Image (cartoon, rainbow, N blue to C red; front, side):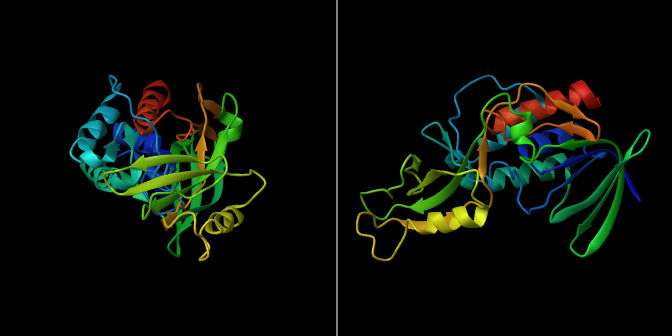
Length: 262
């Protein structure tokens, strides 16, 4: 049985910041296969104002971002351009991640947790002192107020008129010739239903827009605020998505490590 000080659920921005504080003693497990699952997989974009970044983790990643100027365009985060910077950061910090990991059970004993999961047809039993869930699973429980959800679409501009979608926000990235359409989602609808609804915006007979759908986000984009960490009987809840932007998520992750794990 492998042993760590901390198991982090979610290769999120906050999760990676936590792991960067203690890379040898921390293991990240993620049900998907993408870094920054809270931003990249949901194709989330945020305004990135100039400000003093708090914490070593956020400062290091912020420095990596500057090596790729297309990540921030007109003050907006273009997360679709960010994978090279994310990969470089994880490699430089020697962060340990198991992707495609499905949690089967989580048990708590007197002074440790035992996590059992399956990853690529292999069963893993992992023991740790601490367990931190940084995914969006408990966002509604952890948020201070209302949580908003959207299905984001990456669209290539092929004409003058954008795709029409009621109440949707458009985040334009002129350098890449594309934009992200943030389509509000109905909490009662499943991801497959939302994806079908999104595809309905692009019928072959459409005449008001010639723009092309490049990609539908792999996950629902969740937004909100969480001012305090939830401590529950089976660990901690720090929803990375309940942050102002990806650097703020890293700041929260590092501050959590200082307050609870250091």
